[in-house]
Amino acid sequence: MESDPRPIRRRLLRWFAQHQRTLPWRSDPTPYRVWVSEIMLQQTQVATVIPYFERFVRRFSDVAALAAADLQDVLAVWAGLGYYSRARNLHRAAGLIASAGRFPDTLEGLLALPGVGRYTAGAILSIAFDKPAPILDGNVARVLCRLSAIGGDPKSPAVRRRLWSLAETLVPPRRPSQFNQAMMELGALVCTPRSPLCGRCPLAALCEAKRQDRPEAYPAAGRKTRVLTERWAVALVRRGGCVLMTRRAEGARWGGLWEFPGTTVAATGNAEADLRRFLKDELSLSPSQFAQVGRVRHQLTHRNMTVEVFAAAAPKGRPSTASAWVAPANIEARPISKLTRKIAALL
Image (cartoon, rainbow, N blue to C red; front, top):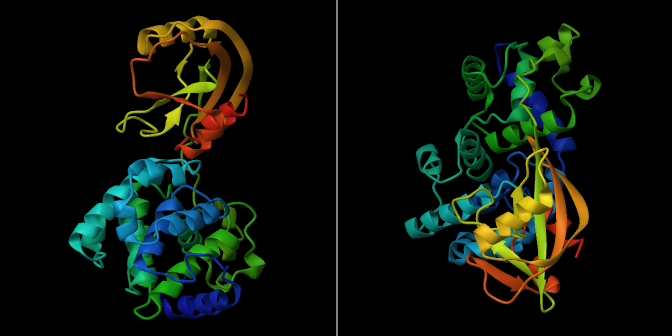
């Protein structure tokens, strides 16, 4: 890559003007909309985010509306998008912004918000406020590694520092919003992890990895995260036309979401026995008419789950935890995960 950043800027901005995608947060890049979109896009693909973003901003049109909303309503709109701590952080941050009376427009002010790191802060500053702040997400890191043939794990501290320095050098003082979006767009559409479309890349003539004819050698593959296999047993406990649901504590994983009661089961364990014990010890329930009704498989980023689902009839009495008897038609109105939605389909 050339030491002069101006050819990169010119070529990339010209390409972006012709090839940028039409995305809902680009049509009106207010700080609020950019912030919501960037939080949703963390570890989630654009195509998945679009309908969630549109529903979210229809329901909570600005920071004040989000701050005034009940967290359960926020989680209900978010349900299915995953990584629910993002929704809780948005809600908490909205309260802080509303109390301050203005959206922060400095790096320090943005980093003080829950769930906002250096990349998200840079995206908000450049895209919403048009300030020359660098960004570095997975797409941008890949483009930079190939442009300069930077070896090593891009997640390692040393390589990370080098990439941030390079991103800061490249972002122009004028039109930083367009430039940073162009960098992300190039990584998403052209400079892809596998089989990059170098013939369509506006920076191919300036790219060291292309000159070496080894674009896929950069960036170096990081160490793979171990994928865990888990076995669960879940109960669809019925009474009077309703089914029992419990709500996870706010501090727990998937906190605030509603689900059917269940427990983990050892690989060689007895699912029905473990589930009966869990219902008795944790919920003071001893259901009758136990029967397995199906099996659900669910994959998360680093976990593969197999869930054995049992139907049961419950005796009278109230379970001893945060719970409710919910009509099947009303389950979708509560904040639930994709896994719970799969299990509900067996009702």
